[in-house]
Image 1 (tube, rainbow over the protein chains, first blue to last red):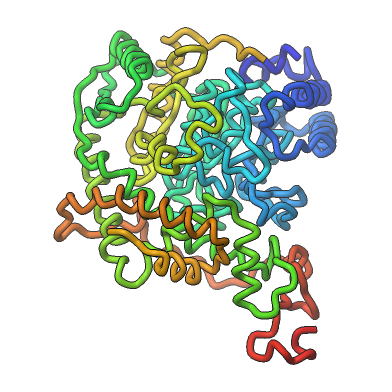
Image 2 (cartoon, one colour):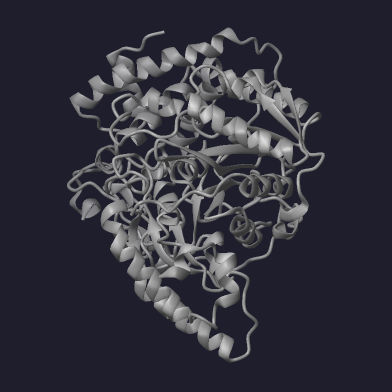
Length: 483
Length: 103
């Protein structure tokens, strides 16, 4: 079991000497079995496939094949990433029995790189939410205190990594869904630049904002996973041609001379005092390591949340139109005409949050409201991009909190959708501007981890990871979660 | 602005959601709360600002016009609630009472 308690990059040199692939996979599956009753990170555990994969890689290596970069990394995938032959439910009754006939590009790339899929993780339905409580299959639990939400929507992926059930996981981040649960569970979570990672096979939520990203134990493992999943994909026309460096090479460069911007808008009223002091202490540690800190201004951030809600919901209303009971997914029984078939299927298949967002988006796009809501939001998005452009003329990285509080209890915010949306206030701007952003653990308050958020220029994940690595070196490591 | 039950019903129909009465009441309240929060955007002057549809929009992306293998029909239909002769089956669109069509 001890192999599961350190980051992958430390285990890797000992793989094959102290532990075989099959032993490692067996240990990971035993760990999952013992901890799942407490944390419920997984919707499905793929034990048989994982054991088969371990044996297959052992045979390939014995036949003289070179070891791939992520050999033996036990991996959990958010259940909105398609896995050929393995159910992909999106945490929805609509897709409860859906088995994709193809792999997402990230699924295929990880498999080729030697990562071993151990299961599919829980999420808010179709990745819409900030707590995993919108899952049709029940919530996941924060490993630091099981009465607390793990954050969302990639809550299961963050829990699986933080509870040491998987060495790494992928999530998707549309408004903070990788960074928020990573922060609340004490893991590293990266949202890459829009277009950096292929979205092919990621079930669509809001296509202009969605991006797949790794959740890992530390920054080095994050760089290792990004190396494998980044890059142009013919199957996603929005994936970028930008060249992919070896992100692990950037890490140790240090932060001497790095310019860090602190936007006043990230530190205003509503930010918990413990989070604020922890985040500022982490920034001071970067300063002590040679970085230069200065104020920057992002005035449109104040308008980011309503802008995001309108744009995301509009895209939801369009993307979720495909669930009509015809091609795949749930179909209502007994409907005699097409309208009834569709409307009943959707009523039965979607949960409350999906319906709420479909309604909001449909309203915002409907005749008479398009100009005042949707187009207005798109214009504010332009202002926000401009704010970031001006800030990045002066600084290399922007720092702030991930979440306004260290965490919240399960059930605490479910009755008030707006309060739930407000948790994403600090993460949403990076999605609207398409920028890479990372959450890295920076402290601890009342038994719960706190995350520092760093944002960088488009396609400059190398600088982002270098700064995050410096934070990781400077702050005390988190203790083991009490499981 | 405040929306009414009539607006909720209209939007539910556009959205193809056969809402329960309880959901209609709940969404009326919640949508009004959320929409009043959105009114914050009205305080921002965006006169003459071009809209952004995608943050890092590139040029059009083309590929060579070459036929490549795609998902076989059987696999594409494998998850369909009902299929026949290589097609998806739905209730009759124009003649719901025609037994031949709804079979």
